[in-house]
Length: 303
Image (tube, rainbow, N blue to C red; front, side, top):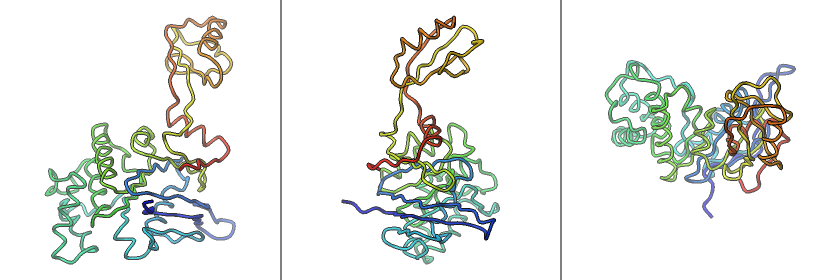
């Protein structure tokens, strides 16, 4: 059995004192295997960034244990193995991409090895076309790639990424997703915090849902209970929505659960709705996550 690259057990962290003390992370446990992408999702303020900073060794937990390939996260050995890309990476705008990566590389290797390290990071971020351009002139998509390259400096085996897809146009988003999939195929473990659940569904083998600092729900993406949804396109908006249905831009829809599409369509006809078309689809990961946030906490033992 291949050992996990990152393990967290019952990790907690609070901020403030007395009556103003806020529990940002509460009893979180997770692990990352080589080549695995795990999606970390939840609302703003759920504790995702705090958890990533704890795993990266930037914060110390109040309780619990974190190990990066057996090393404490604040240790030099852990920093050589795990890289963190924050949501808002502050690069000196006057530097070129290559110069910025060289600046960060000095924390990892002596002068003779830095050039090779930077060249490798440029490959990881697919930055050859902009290596000698100033960071101040880059688009958001290119800046995200620079942040990824910085996190991967030194051939790190664990990447902790905080909203790397935020604000990207579709083309940049697709390119970065392809790059992350390629890194995972090379054996790098990735913990991906993102509100882009379409990308999480595409990339991640598992999803961890945080709510108020605690793990609300976790499962392999293949095991996420999707359920069936009947979508009904109507000729005109309904005056009254039938029981169990909800409005959509094109008409109405309903979770079928144990019912049938035929019975649901019969209910539409009973309410004199003029049905133009219908189809049955599986619930998306986003719908499953929203449902998980409203349901009792559970953990998939297979994850």
